[in-house]
Image (cartoon, rainbow, N blue to C red; front, side, top):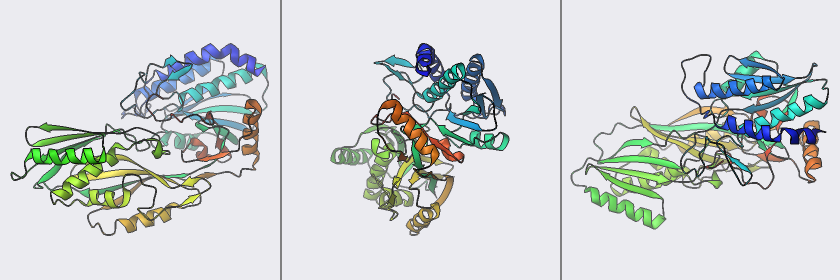
Length: 444
């Protein structure tokens, strides 16, 4: 009966998924306290709550921070925790990221898999159950709106609403996730007010790349301040670097005094940096060689070259660790120059059996020789670990295997979901085993 009801709703599910994807719900600044994450995120929240109401559910907008859609009665609260915000689109899309184009049986658009598609799928699964069965517990679809940034939405929910007693987040992979690595964002910075440098970094732009996305673009403008250095000499040197290392970089001379460099990479989720190519790391290689060649010392660039590098896996910083959840990984997601401060930010995915303090101590040791460097911890999310033999893990894994005819085991991931916000909650779907993870990628 359930499958028949879903089949009846299929065209409506596709239609509503496309409508939600068309709302460009990227986080933006807001002065409206009822729309704390911007107009478009609020529009996505109101759209989904309105849809829930039309489908016959109880709904609530929780001061613009989040909302929920609910049915059923009882003391136990089953939570399905998803989110409506999306990461910035980046460049290189073949399909318009906010048109929800359908091609070859796939819906293309930012949020299609992370996490608008799974949210709509969950909503209509609730609809099918509500239509054909009586449930002796409350089932609540919780709608986050700030998952890709600071989790302020889910923290606000926890302060004002009842917590789920059991549940899942449809924001990862099947069959289900029993462990999620710890996540930490750290920035390294140094003062940069050397106006008399022979070659000065004048401007940096990474197109507002999210820290949890492998950046596919980085731009740096260099200014030549020494009349003894010919701009053509610098350009020729960079051309040699480009050729020798086969780097994707565009070079432009401006005003016979400035050089604009643009590096191109491949975006990916920060949990899987190996699936992308980091444009900031490419730029840092170029800056290191240029500054070194013209005898210019820069602690931040030197530190990056020595301890972070192109393909970081912890070994350069002497903090390589690995357990059943995988190995330590790192994404360089931000690089900027503002108010005479030069800095870059890293997003670490830390194995579940390694604590934050160990990693922080090792990184502090690494910057010990760089007197002008400062390390700042911006954000942390504790890891999630639920016993593979627990009722929740075994039940969800068995459901997946029964429906698909597979015999898959629960898995661990480097991504972070709302499952870790509550006890007795894990991730369940929506990416199928063996499918390429298009989360945060071009043509999602």
